[in-house]
Image 1 (cartoon, rainbow, N blue to C red):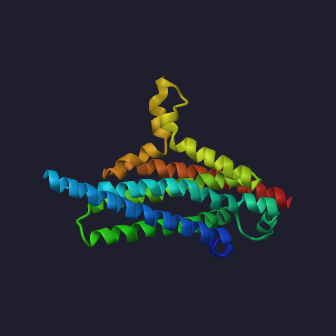
Image 2 (image 1 turned 180 degrees about the vertical axis):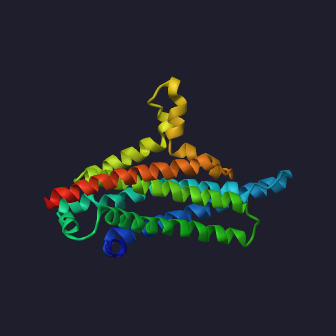
Image 3 (image 1 turned 135 degrees about the vertical axis):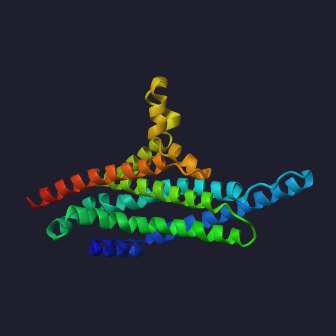
Length: 252
């Protein structure tokens, strides 16, 4: 697994798209952070003039910042999950994995961990922004930690789902489109509600975003964590089965 992990990191570092996309995302997050801070100052000024309670930084800045980061991850992460398997199938480099002593588990987990490291860069950017706020205000750290954890879990779920689609489809553009469509439907499942009014609760239970509401509002709700862990493991297990089958089909 360590060999696969380092190889995937090397590929990410050398790929010209990586630096460009990360720089673009960090620039967008910085502008968004600045805009949220300006809006908060306007709200605070209005609260002082009307002698109302000052708005909460955690809810007015941190919460929307985490929400926008989730949307950003849904756009960015599928670009990298597509490179994991679909690109290798198209370039016929997956045969090298079949000829190596690496198992399906080490290949999948090595690729997954490299993408989780990429996800951690976004979380680190969020942490740096929030730390800047702590120098001049008192923050609700419990709510912030819950929000950051939820962003990480959603990002991990998107990675696992993207890896599954990537190992199923050999055409990168098609895999990317299917991943985007799947993530969009998964996020908006509660709003789309394809099950009908009689099963509206089922759509809410399966929706990706509905399980983030508690954490983003500072409420610790363990079933949400269990949901993300189970769904991520589900996609990973399917990916392991398919990659194991592909490895056998190449060697035979």
